Length: 258
Image (cartoon, rainbow, N blue to C red; front, side, top):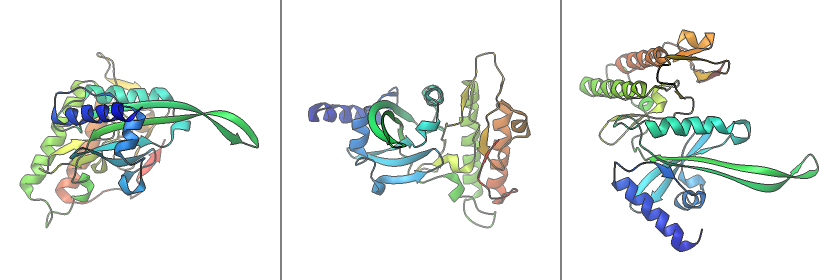
């Protein structure tokens, strides 16, 4: 992409940030490289088992760019499903999805002493930048931290965001304080749809033999290979108890694979 075209796409992204009704769109890899300084370590703002998140500079505004890091072990359909759920989820209590990039390039690589043509996959997601971090940093006991009115508004916002997802037939399946972002007005926004599922209109549950999730937030039916709307409700209940008491009723092992 030449310089003039790159500037045009950056301007288009800046306009999207100003227009809250703009639809998510495809974003070029070169654009995302440009706004994150080629995914510089200095721009890194978070990381997990499957992705690294970078801060992107777009004019006078900022975005968050999620770069999936385990693309070799991940089927492309899983990325497509995450994008599908994000395209449907538009609500003040859900982090705003701006666009995606799915770029695959052939590269020669040395594999066990032989040079082979390998696919280099770049799967990225772009979101609004939410400045105040995640909810887990605000959870304290009742003697300090957030005022009771703030706790109530956060709980109310999470409930409204989750209701919107369920009305769109979306299961989040990894609801926890670390996946709820807090903006500069203390408004909660549900984030991280890496495990989410979109159900058919008349479908209320799904079955799977490959389950991942976060310890302490998994509903009992997860262990039977069943996921449904009440799976998210169970996680919501745990979060509400944490917000009210500041305590976790489970071990600190963060992630489990079933």
